[in-house]
Image 1: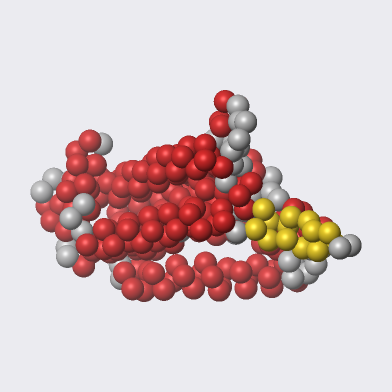
Image 2: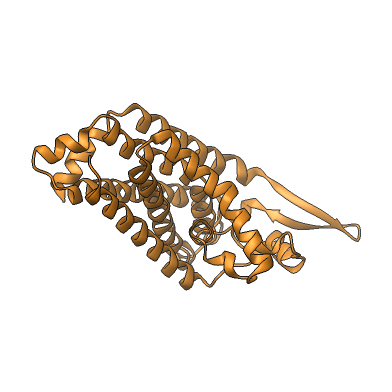
Length: 277
């Protein structure tokens, strides 16, 4: 395992795309945690005002961990594209073939990429944790130790979310072997095809069938934190917003996301073992 991780580190760290996408990910996350706490959305009711989305309160303990997990999840697309580039380059430059010639097995090649995925997800958790501690202390007054850690499991859930989504990207890269095509398929499936299929099946087959699709399951692991705005949306949900507000229980999403991650891994492994490099 150490050998595989060392090999991946040597290949990844000098890679320009890795550096660019990593910087873009950090910039998007840092900007969001700097700008969003300054926003406050109110609605007037009977000549008074009610806080619909008091974002500063979402950056205080313990909710800050839910908020940061949600914001980090929105940037997972950068990480998925990065994984596609890393895996796609192995086919483009025939490095997979060279590594097999020098003694690595095909399983080792795939496991090296999986270790990279775990390392990236773990690094993200550390960044979120440090930012959460810093901003939680700034925006929270009168907090206790329990307030600081009670929602900390959200970071572990985000870890599973990031790993599962990147494993899907890895599967596409191994299957298609073309970086551009794999990125297009990932984006089209995530943004257009799966939501459209969910909408059609939900209307004509079963209202809850869309809750079991992979992108939906993975994305709902880190939902938008509970607040007055979300309560209002749920109370007034109709045919257009029901798919946004409905969700499986957290334990079900966790099991399904883990299952999908394993499925993506074994599909990629089967493809890699059977195809020529």
